[in-house]
Image (cartoon, rainbow, N blue to C red; front, side):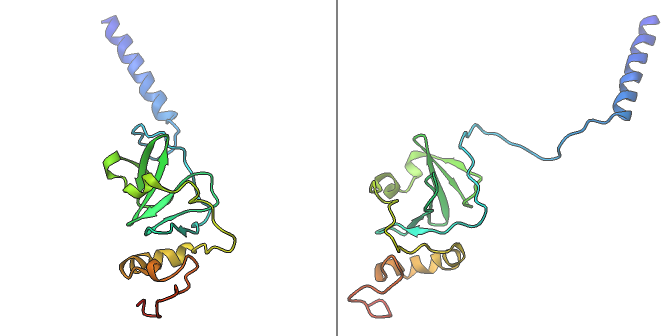
Length: 156
């Protein structure tokens, strides 16, 4: 009997304590699936540069490699590749056989952007990349968007 009173008293005290002093915390969800990819956040949408010979783009002037290809953003890190729908992530692991092959054979100097080379504003890129790919825009234009020699304005 005495034991029951003690248990009831402790349970009542705990109930009162948690009612009077509710736990404080941040609302939100954090899910970790073991991806230790350092976060890189952009203050504003980044410009892009086309990689010659591919309908792929990279973000210049940052300390990490982030690429765009066929509606996905790709990022290598420590020998693995990650993919996202947005340049800020969230990033998910990509199996080696699913990484576009040309990323694995990029020329070592692909990041060297010559002076005056066109940086494509993100808004222009987002609005046009599908059409550029469908119409093979970069086959008819140089990296500055100018028509190549031997092509008329219709790309012939």
